[in-house]
Amino acid sequence: MTRIGLIGVGRMGRNYARIFADHPDIRLDPVDPPLGLEALHRSNWDGAIIAAPTRLHHALAAPLLDAGLPVLIEKPLAATLDEGASLACHPACFVGHVERFNPATVAIPARPRFVQAERIAVWVDRGIDVDVVLDLMVHDLDLFLHRCPGDPVVDVRANGVRVATADIDLAQARVELASGAVGTFTASRVSRRQSRTWRAFDADGTYTSVDFGARQALRVTWERGGDAPGPREAAIDLPVHNALEQQVLAFVDVIRGGSSDRLATATQGLAALELAWRIREAIGTASVS
Image (tube, rainbow, N blue to C red; front, side, top):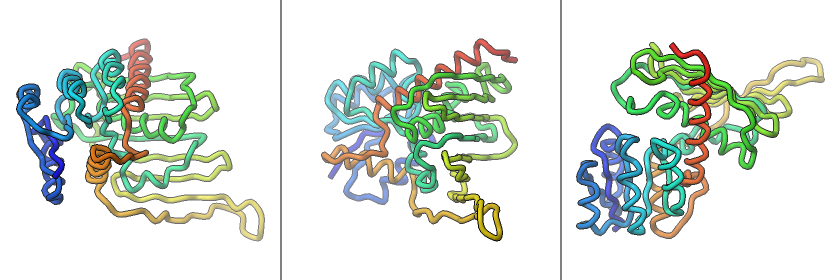
């Protein structure tokens, strides 16, 4: 039996609880965030999941990590770069970049040359302790960096708008890597529709369209010769699974001594956080209404 402390009882906490209910070999101990540190001293957990507001991530996770527990923290890693760097020093710290486990992610090509990512949502009173870059765009920033490993960021340009909160609620960014690969990212939490899509082009011109919400993917190649030149479309077969459940099981496997190359390490979570902060700083130097 693996015992995991779940610090956070909101929507994400309920999602985790529903998943653990289907795994009798895993015991979940839900704890309200204010009681998290006290619970540590009277628990015999094998690991912990932090599903609390971002501003609490460091304060809740640091003592758990110092006590030797593996910890999975909901994205983003932390509220500030200093706090993120402190957590990234712990090899047993992981970040819940759950889109890595979305079935549609397998369709994204390695090292794409050009990416258009759109992640927009209708307004809900959730996650507003951080701006839209840290709330939503960070998902796609992590995927972009994960698909382009070892390729440093050389240029960031961005703009943003305040709509419903005192923070940025709508943002657009352009990120260029040393290889010349470019990603453009749009994130909004004040839209009238939902969209979580990627459009990616390989160096050879192959186009891949990914819909994370519908969990569908399409690949388009261009036939240049023959009697009928033009595009050739093919749907991509995707696995069927629950992304959050797969992430939880990967974390449990790590607790039990295994490994997962899809589970985001704290170092990778820090890289996504650093890029998010560069985008926020670029927005700060642009016109913000």
